[in-house]
Image 1 (cartoon, rainbow, N blue to C red):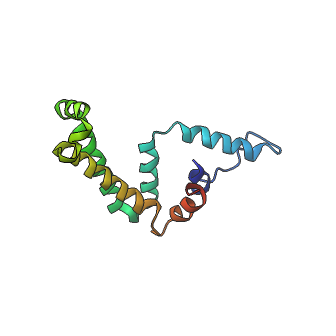
Image 2 (tube, one colour; image 1 turned 135 degrees about the vertical axis):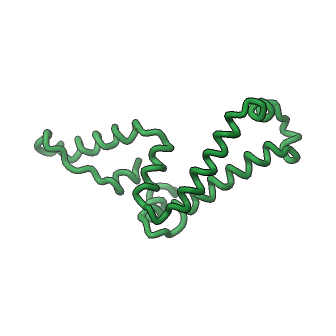
Image 3 (tube, rainbow, N blue to C red; image 1 turned 90 degrees about the vertical axis):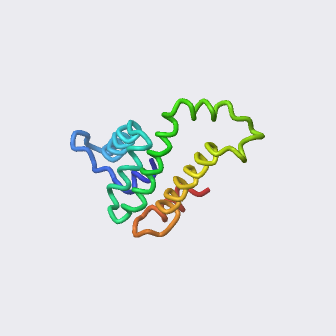
Length: 129
């Protein structure tokens, strides 16, 4: 949400006058933003920066593979019943783990690498404590 106030700086609302105009605009912006799903927020970021289309493709392709895997009831049941002792040798678990690394790689490219956006600097300001 902090990023959205920097990237989509709210404009003062014309229906509110006086000192509360700026505050009202930010509250309205944050309310609307909080109604979005995390996937919508990430999609909006990628749409804002078309030069990151390969990163977006990597992120959404991997996310789709993850959803397909979760939609497979046999694989989902297998993972639910998988013991901790068998994780290292389990092929389905390894597939999920690989997908999680691919999503993390895409998010790292988006937020933690300089990529001709403000996201790297904003992450240093708001995301790293």
